[in-house]
Length: 488
Image (tube, rainbow, N blue to C red; front, side, top):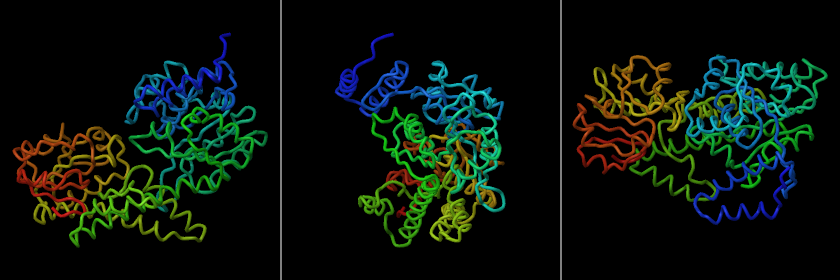
C-alpha cells in the first residue's frame, strides 16, 4: 500500500495551489474533492478526521436528484440515482441529460466514467447497500387546494422500508412541509418495524442555472435530525466541503423543514416588494434601479433579489410560497405577507401583457409580437410558472400573433404554449413584428444589433421587462422604449 500523505504535505499542496492565483475557490474545491477520494481509499486520518467513501442511493433523478447525485459522486462517494421513469434512466445511461443545467453533462459523464455514478430503475439493491438514502422526488402543488403533493415522498418511504439493510440514514432532500419527516419515519416503522433508520431533513438551496456551484459552494448546509446517530453520517457526506468552510447548521427536523420554506417565502417577498416599488417609480418619475441600489447598499437589506421584472416563476417560489400559506393556515397561524405576495405575483404577469398592449397603442389584435426569452430565468430550460406563459396567453387573448425565441426552452415551451411561431434566433423572431419584448434576460439578448432589428420589424417598439438596456441606448436608434420602473 502506498504511504499516506502527511498532514504537512496536504497543507503544502493546498498552499501551492492557492499561491498560483486565479480561481482560488475553485482550486480549493477541486483539491478537496481529489483529497477526499484519495484519502478515502487510503483510510487516512487528517486534521478534519478520517475520510470515508459512502454508498448513497438517490431516489428521484429529476433536477434536484440528478444535480445532487452527480455532485456527491464528484466528492468521491459511490452514488446510485434511481427513478421509475425508464425512458429517463435509459437516456442517462446513454449519456443524454434530460434537463439543461450548465456543467451538468460534463459532471455526470466524468463520474459515470470513474464508476462513482450509476443509474437504475431498481430500488431494492442500491438501498440495501446504502449508508444514506436521499429522497429527492417531486412535491408539486396538489390540484384543488395548493398543498404540496407528498404522494411520491410517501411512496418512496414505503419502498425504502422494505429494502433497507442495517442502520441507514434516510434523508428528505425534496422540499416538504413541516412534519413530513415525522410522517416518513412513521411510514417506514409501520411498513417494516425492524428497520433501523434515522430520518433526516436536508433541504436543497439550488438555483437553476447555478446549481452545481450552489451545491459545491453553499452558503450553508442545513441538517435537521432527531436521532444523534445521523450527525456523524451527515458530517461524512459533506466532509469534502470542509476545506472551503461551508457552514453546517444542525437543527431539529421540523426546524430544518421550515427553514427552506421561510427562505423561499422571504426571497419571493423581496422580489415582489421591488416590483411594487417599480410600479410606484413609474408613477412618480423615479428610477427603480437606483432605488434598488440605494437600499441594497444597506447591509441589513442587501442587493440580491432586488431586480424588478415580470414576477417570479420556476419550480420553487410559486409552489413553496403557496405551500407555506397552506401550512400556516392549517396551524391557524396565517401568513398575510406571503398570502399577499402570492396574489400580487399572480396578477403581475398579466399586467406585463397590458404594458405591451399600451406600448403598441392600446390594441394588439392582428399585430405580431416578438417574445425574446421563454424560460422563467436564463441558463435553464425550465418553463414551470414562467412569466412568459401568462404574458403570451394574455396577448393571444387580445388577438396578437406571437413569434418567440429562447436559447434552451423551446422544446419545453411547446408543451405549454400553442399557436406560437418558434424562431431560430432573436432576429428571426423580430421579422415583421409590431413590438419586441424581452421577457427573460439571457446573455444572448444583451448586445442586440438595433439597426438590424429596426430594419426587420414592422414597427420600432421595444419593451424591456428585465431592464437590460439603458433607455438612451435604444431610443437613439429610433425605437420607442418601455421598461420596468424607469422613465423611457
